[in-house]
Image 1: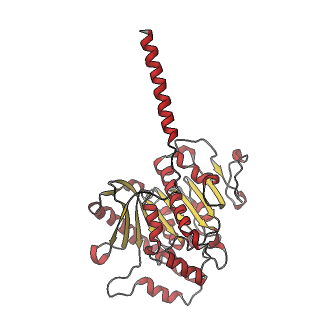
Image 2 (image 1 turned 120 degrees about the vertical axis):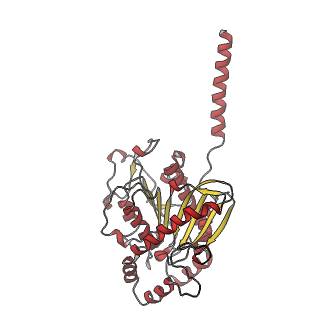
Image 3 (image 1 turned 90 degrees about the vertical axis):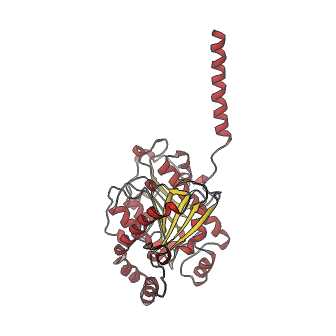
Length: 366
């Protein structure tokens, strides 16, 4: 009998070692590699489908449940999401249902609201145009929320993929982040996560931090602040980070500009006209894949407790692109793994309190 006990004990130990070896033999792939899922596209319009707003859906072909990501383009969504096609496809290939929503798309036989507004704003300064749009953005929020409800009801019969509506993620680029910030602050349990890319939020000036359920990634391309700047200091990614009260990360990616997530034609136009500073053309694809990978890592870590993904957001040595700024708050009471620093901020002088217990931490952030 003792021999049998010894035999099974040895077998048990060997089994554990085999499992451990198997797990370490296949380390998790970096999120910055291109996603591998095959995707399809659906175009939804008020004329054809009866939805409130124009929407392009990029979704995985493989049946399953996926996090829904709702994206708004620049200039309060006057910039159509079709100009972000490659970037949104990069996100979807990681395993997400990505909804690019156009709030001002043109209808049949009608001049678009966005086109009419653009004509007016051409005669104004950038700041005055922003202030005029800020006065109107609240009117856009009900339309956006109605579209999201419509999509929840009607897309389930259009695809074999299904959205996990408990994991709603809001995302934006540039001034449309004013709309997302308004939703996050006024509907604190509506979205599980929010991704602010190159945010310009003039409405943030008079806002104060308030408890929100939403985890936030506040992300900027460093050249967005170089004149002629397309982001405004004091109303950008650091201000958004200050206002968030749940798990949050902020970062500034070096050597890239405000138009880096757009299609090449639009990027080239931005580059030639000098409207915004841009990085090198040869790196546009790499930058888009990096940003998509960062969003992927953030969602997997914060919404699905895949703690192994956390290191790709807080350890610069694992990132293929260099940063000019990195800060984070992990809020351990909401996480399953609290190892490591709970807070790191290289710019505490900006008014963000640092945890004095982690001052020994040294990051290669400049």
